Image 1 (tube, rainbow, N blue to C red):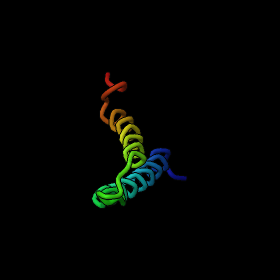
Image 2: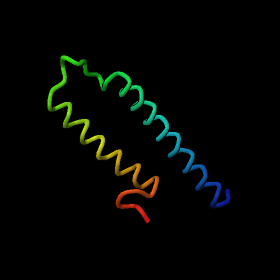
Image 3: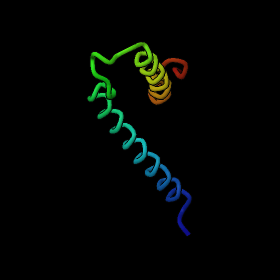
Image 4: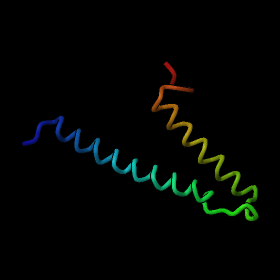
Length: 71
C-alpha cells in the first residue's frame, strides 16, 4: 500500500501536468492574438479578453498571495 504522501504527490503531479498543458495552450493562443486578426476585433473580443484577464488575475493573486489573497 502506497504511503499517503505518494498518493498526494501523484495527484499533485497530475494537476500540475494539466495546468502546464493549459498554460501552453493559452500562450500559443495569445501568440496568435487569440485567433483574431486586427480587422476582426470588436467589443465582444475585448469583453472576452477582459473576462479571461479577470479570471487569470484571481489565479495569480492566489498563487502569489496578492490582491485579496495578500497576507
